[in-house]
Amino acid sequence: MMKTQKNYVMFFFLAFFVSSLIVGQSEASIYDNPKAVEALSKCLKETNATMYGAQKCGHCNHNKEYFGPYFRNIRFVDCRASRAAKQECKVEKVGQFPKWKFGNGNYAVRPHSIEEIASAAGCNDYVANALGTASYQIADSNFSEQKDTTSQNSVSSSVYGSKEELARCLKNKGVIFYGSPRCSHCDKQKAMFDGAFEKHLNGNFHNCKGSPKDEAFCFSKRTFPFPTWIQPSNGKRLPGPEKSLDLIASTFSCTLADRSVGSQKEISRASNKVVNSNVSTNTEKQNSLDNSFSSEELGKTENVDILNKSSNDPILNSEQTRPSSMVASSVAPSFLDREKALLEQKQEKLASCLVDKNITLYGVIDQTKGKPIQYKATKQQLNELGDAAEKIKIVDCSQNQAECSGILVYPTWIFDGKNELAGVYELNNLAQILGCPIE
Image 1 (cartoon, rainbow, N blue to C red):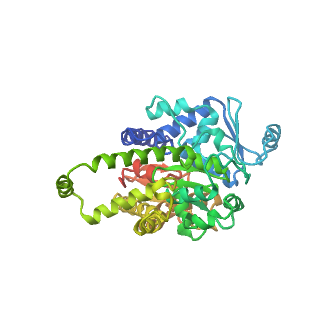
Image 2: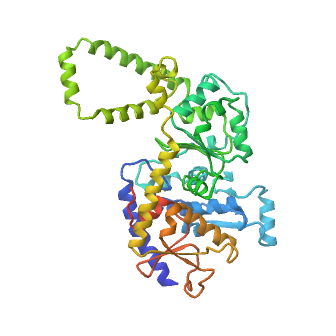
Image 3: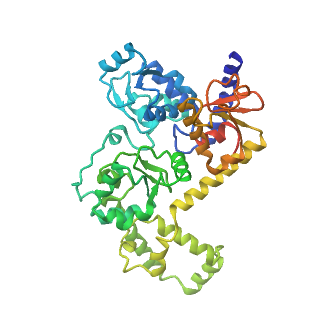
């Protein structure tokens, strides 16, 4: 046991060092850095934070997965385990699981992200130090916004214009709506658009319960709880349940203020065109000859620019004023297909690396055997690899107990014949720790 702990310490020290180099100047995120996860778990321990829940609670297990092996630093009370635990949960008025109680007096019920936990606990300074930044800003949105779960249909149109304009803006920006046809919160969110969702955003809806592959894709994108909005181009996200249209508009820059800024840019571009029209035709021809893009590449570039423009852009806002090629290009590419293709490439690269390095996953594959939580955790880890999981070496510990002797946590990765990595890890995080570049 001591040897295993030493291996953990040595391995994670190396992983943290590599992670710090990779993060570099990019936007700080707890998810991308195991060192930040560990720092947050220690902060929660030092401030006497407690998570109240139950062993068979799906929301609780999802919160535990945020921390991986570092959840051991956090006090967890199973409200169904004993009379004393039940009494403590009664005193704390625990209703829905999980309920977090933090040392600063804050509470959080079913937090939607690890960032939300960090914010409510007042642990941002710990995270900032771990990430090597002067300060840490919540990646998704601040805690007070995350608590905004209003489902009112009557919202101020002064924030985003009309619901039709908001839906078009979200569509043109490629914002994806992750949910399920049987999700009541998803239905409420759609109903807020008064028919504009069905008209403009049906193509941006991804059914996370459509197939095992769809479910694995959504799991890799952290789309729980439903519905979750994600803008792939910049990583902005707004997790469920349903949010007010004002909050959606401000999160994805679909407000009147953003439109005003866009109009000013158009005026500026129009002025530049007038000035540039005095340039000689010969100079323009020479510039076109110096252009290194082929006509095909240029077409692709224009399409990308058009897709990135909001429908609030005065030039693109009216379909009547747009050339037919521009109208077609705004709907032809599938943002979901592009996201899926990129994810599948990463999964294939990681699986190939795991095979080359002879890294083995030990877990519970048979749903009828072993503990349900062990099976679920193993399944979640395999979901991170998608279809590529079929290529890697897996030992089903529900069938091979002798081979799995000494392994205490499922799933566990064994590499170099002795080192262990226990718990469920997000794809990029797993690749960094195991030394498998997938970018």
